[in-house]
Amino acid sequence: MRKSELKKNHTPFDDAVVRYRTFMEKIIGAQRVISTAQEKRDVAESVLLRLCAHWESFVDEHIVDCVNCDPSGLSEHFGVNIPRHPSWELCHALIIGDGYTDFRSFADLKGKSKKLLPDESGQLI
Image (tube, rainbow, N blue to C red; front, side, top):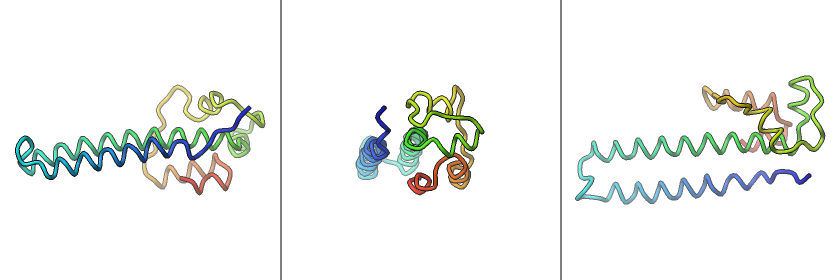
């Protein structure tokens, strides 16, 4: 079974950042439709929320891909035998399941990553 390519998730996220940055540059320069500072802040806030959603998807995918590449850390954490070459779907089910993954902070994300992922993959987050 082919292993996940860790860099593939970066492209959609990087593209979203560029797209929203370009959009915000247009908004900041707009003087007719979005003219007040408050309106510009409102639009900027919605753009930031969209970027947060993209970031969340990126992190979820990246963690699943890291486990797909090397499931040893997760296997040890759960105390179960995970196949050496698990499917992406199995990795997704083990990490995400059917619930919402909540990281309270970046430190929380790093801490959970260190517990579940091999040493080399934790550096990618």
